[in-house]
Length: 290
Image (cartoon, rainbow, N blue to C red; front, side, top):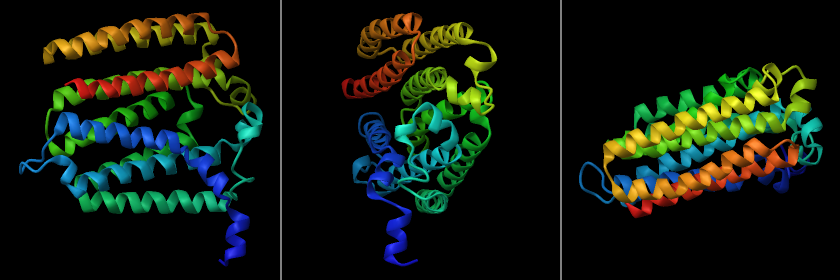
C-alpha cells in the first residue's frame, strides 16, 4: 500500500476521533494511580513505577481499549448516522477496511505485550479483546448483557494491576467495584440517549425492551447495589479517610441520581454521561489520600 492510498484510507483527525484519546488517557491514568498509590512496590521490593512491565501492561490495556472503540464504531456506523451523524468517522475519516486492519493489529500487539509481562496477562488480554469484539458485534444490541460486559472490563482494567503484582487486593477491589458500577450506570444512560438509532436498526437495549421509565428504575436499583457494595468493602478496609472521601463523593452521587430522575431529553443524558466520567476521575484521585 503506497503513501497516497494510505492517505485516502485514513486521516489523522479521523484516527484521533475514533480512538477517543481522552478516554485512553483516563484508562492509563487510573492504572498508574493504582500502581503508585495502592500497589507501591513489586514482590521483589522494587518501586512499581521503576518496573518496565507496568508500562507494558498499561500500554497493552490502552491499545485494547482503542481497538474496542474502533470495532464498536465499525459495527455501529448505521446507528451512528441516526444518533450522531456529524460524529461518524468510519467510511469518512477512515475507510472500513483500514478500521478492521487497525483493530486486528492493535489487539495482536496488545496480546504480545501482555505475554512479555506474563502469560496470564496475555490470556486476560485475549479474553478482553474477544469480549469487546463480541460486544460490538452482538451483545451491545441485547438488553443489559452488553452494558454488563463493558462495565466488567472497566472494573477489570483497575483490578488487573493488583492481580499482576498481588498487592493490596481488597483496597483495589473497592476501586474496581466503583469503576464497574459507575460504568454500568453510564452505559445504560448511553442506551437511553441512543434510543432512536438503536430502535431503527433492531437493537433490543433496556430502554427499548422495558421502556424509558423502567430503565430508570433499573439504574436506581444498580445505584443502591453500588452504594451497599462500597460500604461493605470500605468497612472491611476500615480506613476513616477512605470512608470520609466516599461519603463526600456520595453526596455528589445522590445529586447525580436526582439529575437522572429529572432527565427526559437526549441532551440531558449526554450531560449525565459526561458527569459519570467526571465522578470516576474524582473517585480515582482519592487513591492519593491513602
